[in-house]
Image (cartoon, rainbow, N blue to C red; front, side, top):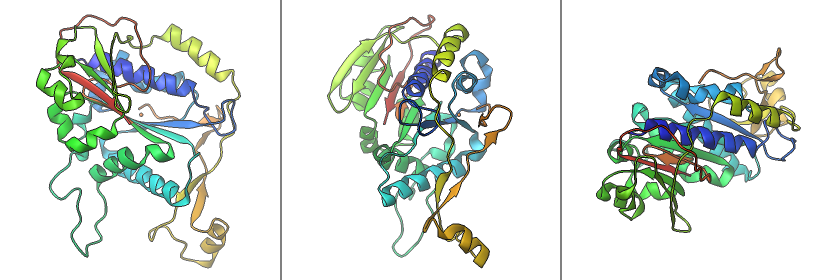
Amino acid sequence: QREDLAVSILAMSIVGLAAAHDPFPNGALGRSARFVLLEPAAAEEHPDLLLSQLSQWLPHEFESVGRLGVTDSLESIATEVQRRLDEQVLNGEAIFVIVRDLARFRELRRSEGDFGYSFGEDKKAGPAQNFTTLLKDGPTVGIHLLVWCDSLTNLMRTFERGTLKEFELRVLFQMSGSDSSQLVDSPMASKLGPQRALFIHEETGTLEKFRPYSFPQAPWLEIVSGTLRARRQGTPQPRPIRLSQENKPKTSEELMEFSQFSFSAEVDVPIDSSAGLPKRSSETDSFQSDSITDNMKPDGAAGDQQDETASGLES
């Protein structure tokens, strides 16, 4: 699969989204964003293509999530989606969840009963259900997915066919006409060359061939970093959390602490005192069966490799 091109499109999407958002509220652009990166350990085999290295250059907060943290992370974000829906928060901090190599995260695969509940049973949602919640309900409240998956077979292990329509922006690399037709109702991806991809906009029906950029290099990232850091960054602010039976106040002291927020409380963003910026870990809606992009249509070159199945999407 075209992992190099897929990851390059993800990287350029992250940079583009960072350029369009402030690191914190009340910045120069008026809308802040943070990134949650699901990048498997296997990605370290190609250190020059690690998405986590972008946190060195971008002033935004990056949260790195490994396989052991997937369940808790998705539950937390799905809870935030529900809080925003309940409180009608439409202008909150944007959250971009980036999944590199979906097939590596088996926790996200659907199974019988994953998307249904037995009558009278209050069953807690699992990571696969929460992932689907982010895809379906997240964009309305500013929470989006960017996903790369290496093949249609692995993609269907996570999403039902009808759910794929939730990915408004998609990118496909060369694949069979049958797989292409299942993803975008057209066999066009079967006619792509080695350094070409197909961009699809679900709402408008746009299909456009393009040539992806290569992975951004340090000299260019240094220029981008300087430009972004020269803008007004905004001010770190506490984030609201949704109260549940598990974290509701149990003592009078706790009640006094939470009472001013009714059904929500505030938690501080972790700050690195030495840098004055949110802490970033070494690792971090769109779908990609070998590539994804937001609304970028790059035309730079990438290294030569053999043609293989690939596709991409984004919510």
